[in-house]
Length: 639
Image (tube, rainbow, N blue to C red; front, side, top):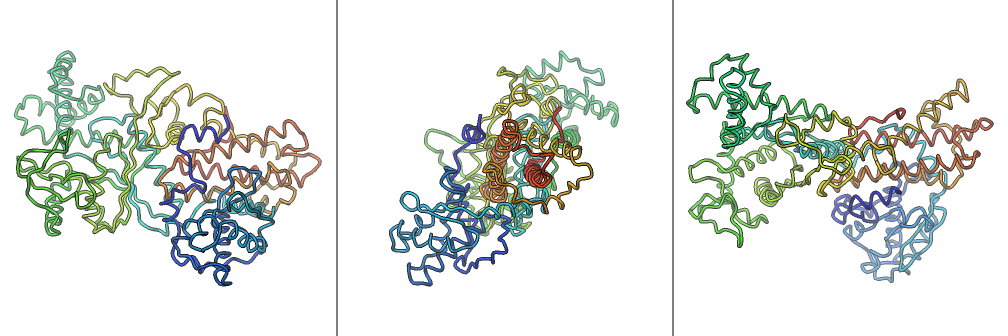
């Protein structure tokens, strides 16, 4: 299955330049008509697509200065894209400049395209350009541009693709934030991987990223976990049988029936003896056991996350916020902004939200910020709603100075997106943005059959079971092969099979094949210097096969992929890119199997061998750079 087909089957089609219109507009800056073109020495492009975009914009500037077209705005220029054409035969790069600028320029698209072609072909880096269809421009770069770009890859190493796009802008990514009531399940695994990969991607794109976990330790679910812990504690002390525990579970006296609470119960018994066994007053034992179960469960959660290779920078406790009065302070702030009132909330037609009551309530003017209804922040007993705590937490994010917030939630939190977005707008005066990524459910299968749940968890398959079965790198990569909002089937058989239909195998196999070439090179050419620095000096002009240059051009898209994926908040694009690059590399390998003169190593031609080794190493570095975004280690050889 070709890489492009795999990408199209498992995710939405991307726009021509890999950016949504919103992302493209975000990625541009003001004053684009002031761009100057670097001298050709030759031109080395860390991101050739961005540099060529500047060349196109400079050509537009020249036409404006020559009086051949009307001036255009920065917003018009933001619509220009420079991308690989849909058909490789049409050229190496294509631009829509004439199409998007024709109307504001007051010219027919093909007429404007003709003038742009004249300007573009005068650039030393461009070997030719022609007009296609109604006014698209396809053009070719001189071959040494791509070869010099390979040298840039070799000099940069795995840091290749690092971008200054983010300009050190602070971004907080909140992800996982699972209730401290038990071990992580597979749904948490997907959110953890998506959030962690997105944080790494944003950091590579130049943003200053903080990874945060919000500990929901003030809600009713923690109290239920404490009640279940107390029964397991009494069971450990011999005061309760397993049958009695199961009866309590059936009567819904407890909600958590997994055996994972037995070790914490044993720890409680070691620490406190039978102190809590005979105390029946819940007001006495519940606060202590709540704190204990949170401590134990957060320790378990952190162990699970560590097994997956996930680590957060900050853990924020909901209970700590409530105890220090942060909720009341947030409500007072909104009141001072005249965004709170007392009123009777009408239920939406055909539905009644859980927090709706037909009585006067303290309401937040969420509809003033795009929400469907105003939201109550206080219950009838005077306690705060869950949303009130969320407002306090997001106020703490705003107060800490983050101009951009990203929350990674499960799909069951979809109803919270509008209200949280409204809250952040209100709390920040519209200065802080909030993006919410919703992760759909994961089904765990084996050869298409559902996998049974473990006794330890009771009602779900744990993250640790997944990692123990196939390894963290497989879990991480596979979880990122589909967009986060698409349902996902994790099939043990499929993710471990050795075929091109398994993307994690196919990408890792490409890297391992490259390493095997180097091992053979050391045997074929004893004493040869295969360092990246030496390969950067290789005679790359010996790379003349069209497929070799095709691999070079694709590798050159990595910086563009990093920036586009970061702006779109879509780390799965990295998986598509890596699969396509691996596919082209495997095709080049197979071509050498069919024609001996095209093999990477030529015993009688040291120079062409060095040039091809440079290409192999460049592909390996790009793959390693992409895998690093996923938190995955590249393999040296397949076993």
